[in-house]
Picture 1 (cartoon, helix red, strand yellow):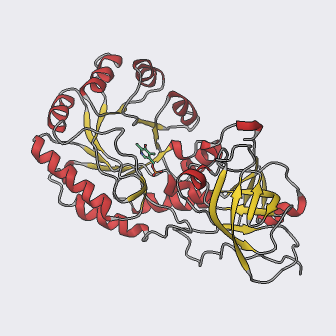
Picture 2 (cartoon, rainbow, N blue to C red):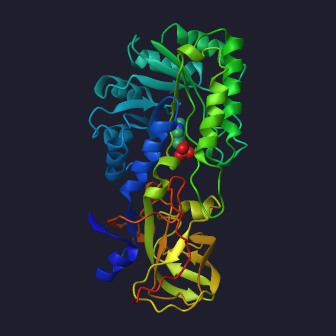
Picture 3 (cartoon, rainbow, N blue to C red):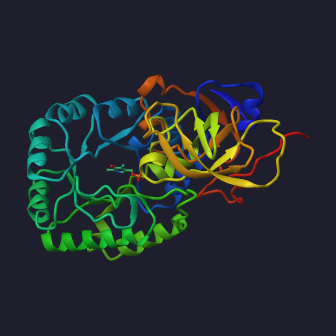
Amino acid sequence: MKVFSCAEDYLRHHRPERPVLAFRPHAATRATKWFLDNFPGRVLYATKANDSQPILDAVAAAGIRGFDVASLAEIERVKSIEGAELYYMNPIKSRGAIARAYYEFGARCFAFDSHDELGKILVATGGAEDLTLFLRIAYPNTHSLIPLEGKYGASAEEVPSLLLRARQHAARLGIAFHVGSQAVVPAAFGEALNQVGQLIVASGVMVDAVNLGGGFPARYPHSDPPGLDCYIGEIAKAANVLVVKHACELLCEPGRALVAEAEAVIVRVDARRGNALYINDGAFGSLFDAAYSGFRFPVRCVTPDREDVGAAETAFSCYGPTCDSADYLPGPFVLPDAVGEGDYLEIGQVGAYGRVLANRFNGFGDFEEVRLTDEPMLSMFAQMEPRKPHVLRSARI
Ligand SMILES: *Cc1c(COP(=O)(O)O)cnc(C)c1O
């Protein structure tokens, strides 16, 4: 991958036909190191947020050893990382997948949320005695922008018998939850840990680990969450009153928070109609969440040597390149009035749930890739003032 100092620098030498994923490895490194330095336990990476090789290499180089995986395909990708430890945390797996994960790939950590699934794991691993089993509990996702509840999780009534049975087979027993993605209220983690504490007491079963899942937020124009140190504070406070606190390992498995800042997409405007821009990536590409999850992403015009047309700004919406009218990104994308056909835009914060959600609908879905060394438009980690996202920069000196 070629390296440039910024999007404008790249575009001075190239006129890419396809959208361009711009990778900032230093952003993934910084986020990962922050979690490793500040989280009071083991930090895993949630592979589904972005399983591209450069991202996996960056989080591994920063010190991640454990990977939360949900499929055999993710397991095979993660196995490219030397020494990777697998946490197969999807609560529903086929027997064949469990067996291959255990025998072929060396997975020892598995999640379950029912007696049926626990039975499948025990049978498919031949009654193995070296398993770490995590009971995924249900937790209401009231504090997150993308709720994940309803699909998985044992209810409070089911927990005691599940813990009791798993305890008899597991080398290590844990409880796992997920507060929902982009959890904007730090207390979500404290409340969930309090609930875990009550379930442990009610069950009378000791556990060796609590996995707090993901949900740690990134920064977007519509969502400016409190600092991540507030989240760590809530977690430390609640963990400190767990009955099992001395014998219990805490784990977390952030996806979004580690990699959101590490990729942006550079798109070209192919048409302008009123305040709607027709761009060459969209809902079926790396911008799914802009269409379907109500997300706003930071944007700036990065056409090199563009005449500065003043500070006036307009709220644009965008259409992606496919012929489906659902390929619509309401935004608003705030850009200079003069933006139009031929301009290039950098849309930031798509490192998590960007490229992994892109498909090949209508023949689109291919990206160029470059590396950039400048700062992302928004950051939860940068010491510096984040760069103002929507200023049209005149590069003419
Ligand atoms: C998706 C997922 C994560 C990562 O969630 P983020 O909100 O991206 O941090 C972690 N754990 C599990 C089990 C998940 O399904």
